[in-house]
Image (cartoon, rainbow, N blue to C red; front, side, top):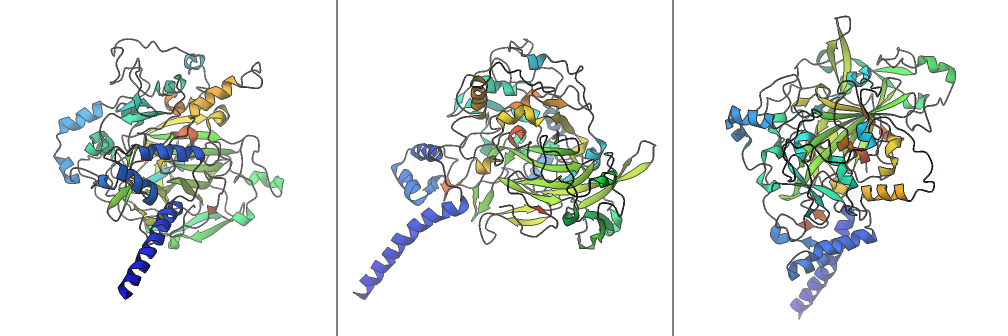
Length: 594
């Protein structure tokens, strides 16, 4: 009888504990309750499993596709194996990268015309604008002087990618998996034309390859940055740097836009203390500038040896261009958005099980300048990110040529890209997130240093031209927060907003360039069309009937690819991507944005 009672108690304990775990863990990992539409899509996803038992364990225990769990290695080869590839293979890979804006037809996988046949796509007024007649502007020198330096992880398997190369391996697909037949090959010059298709569904860029076969274009080994100079700034990191006292800050750079520009919050007569906009550091003693020793900053270490298969061809240079988007927020404020693209995001592992993979990965950092003076930095991290005052982040002083032929010193800030996820952090080490006890964490180190300023696609953007496309101040920044796309796509909303205007006869406001996007003088013929594509840059979340997919306690093995830079809340008033914004003035171990 005693054993029976124990058995009954044990069974009761299991009966209560298991449902609580199944109910509580998903809510802990994703505290935002799903909407009615999301619950409907989730029910359809669960129903896609062909097995009754799998559907029941998924619904009641939140254990979905457990028979699909398998080893998910970053690479099917050891990294050393890539060193055995022939130089002819390298040359073939590089030949496949065509420079944007040349007008040459790209290799495509769509049918309908040969490479020599001209495009029959309807030309619009915005396509016919002669860029030479537009008043192009150069990148302000202070933006380059204070551009980021990115430490990629030394053990990375998925390196920076060129968006022009990426789209050559993608097939446009309507939500639900139906391929779209095009009349011309997909390229950066026609990508946004997918928005105009008469479909009330989200359009995805689906990989033409099985990503678990690990095709080379996912890895982008040929884009590994070269060695960066080994000299260390300020005598092994020792010295003084300027920083501002936030309590004594006299200007409203923290929260601005075109309608609410910079204004003084104390004596406006001290406007003369502002920098001239040429990137010069303000005078000592002005604007409450103080000095502090950098002894508390971790000194820079030597870069790790070059990755196998890589031959240096410039200091910090990568063949994968970064994307620089410059956004003005009134006459005194300029936000410099640096976007970094990777063809694949490798999720992290918990107990040897990997979660969070997706094709396509957009990361970014933003520097807010006040009259040419850097004030704050934002670093994207999964579905959000962290903001820091300029004085808080690690710097590296480097010498660059001056106009008079001499050398001058500029101060660059340093970022750390996490292995696999490419989330951006202000310091090296482990960065736990979501789960307790460091079960789920990003890792950063002082791997190859990438100087994105050496190879960029650069633009000015007037965000007022694209406000109707913005999802608002709390966008789904990455696939981590976008398992399923919205029921109504962004380009569908855009069409409806145009047809349901209260005043259809009102004159349309003119914006420069292609819907507010204008190249800089450094690349006047660069493609602009791709920027306006409003669909994900990677595969839709795989169904439960796909052998590659599983979901445990709400965490997916494969997620939907991210949407591009246009919907990263470029019109943000504050430095952060969310309305809730705290600008840290010191790097804190274990600090999180959520």
